Image 1 (cartoon, rainbow over the protein chains, first blue to last red):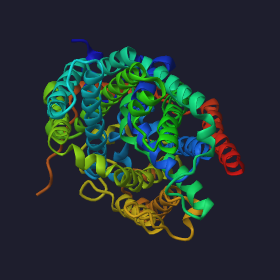
Image 2: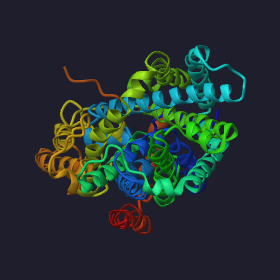
Image 3: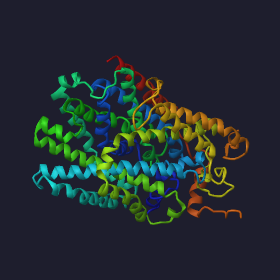
Image 4: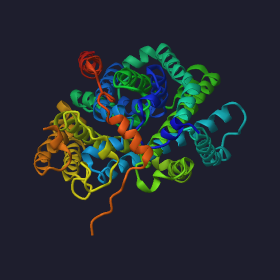
Length: 465
Length: 54
């Protein structure tokens, strides 16, 4: 087993010589990771408030803004030292406080991947029915848990090769992005007059509120990439080689493929591409669509499991465990959710997406202000891996209260502006979104509270004076 | 009771030493920032304006 293989299965920093992913490979992997069924659900959510043109543009703008936040927050530290997103939070949260970020990552990835793996299994059943391999009915539904387990087992086998497994799966499945764009072309070309005249069913009388919600959904969707991004960009050699792959490879496919769900929701009142492709082009088109969905979700889940497993490596108790053990620990919750409570996840998706924005927007704000303003880009890589009380990032008992207070302030700001469960909003929401003020509030609180931390000589801030 | 010191393992120590060398790491250069501002701020502003007036 080579050194690189060991390194990309650990949370250790990668050496420049081990970061072999160029822009093309990174773009391919990020695009395959980004393109999944959630695009349809995001599009469907936007289609509730905006028409096709406005929805597409608002969503695209939101995705690019959210991606910039994620890139500016986790990107610099991850790409400089070849570390993952969770490890990049140690300078802010402390040598023990990073567990907060790890928990956010685990909840997010388990949630998203559970949703995707359920979609994968359901699509595979639908595909089997469409191909005549299976009768429609209860037996198909019963196969969903079996296929969930099968998918998890396949992901486990692929990821035994570490990051190379993610890249391999991406290379095999990247065609589905093109298929997705073809599906979008079909819907647009067949239903254009209906598309441009369709009225969103949940639209508020306030035009600005609807438009801001489209932008907010885009920001929230791409903020959910924070847990994934570090594990991918750490494989690239420098900052220059990640900007375009992240901004175009990861941010662009989401709004583009979300247009499929947006268009379906507006015209056919369903975001399920298999259903509307059957309407547009018959069974053959539905089969292509189902193949797309199956492949898309498999690729994204593979990347998610990998990122989550790397994140878990930051726990001392798991640092020396076999990679396969770590994979099992990561995959098991996803499999259990997919087997036992699939419908609950479907029902709560909108709330889940909103909750993602609540947590990750302030986290990004804290990381950005900490790295660029407080530390002036100086990071002590040794302190990131040291649990010693003398470590620069030990703060108080390993926790930085300034970052925790800032995270809480950011979450409260978000909730006071937009209730993620009911979508009731404050008067200011249509003008500022909820994620952006949440990130700004967290950044401001972190900046202010870090001044006494710096004066106390803790946190390694003195090195930047 | 003071907490026990936790030393870095030799392979990790070697990695960190390599990354601590001057010039061993870099984040975003000027070109990267130009692309980030363009794609993350300028383009979204244009899209938002286009969408609003569409």
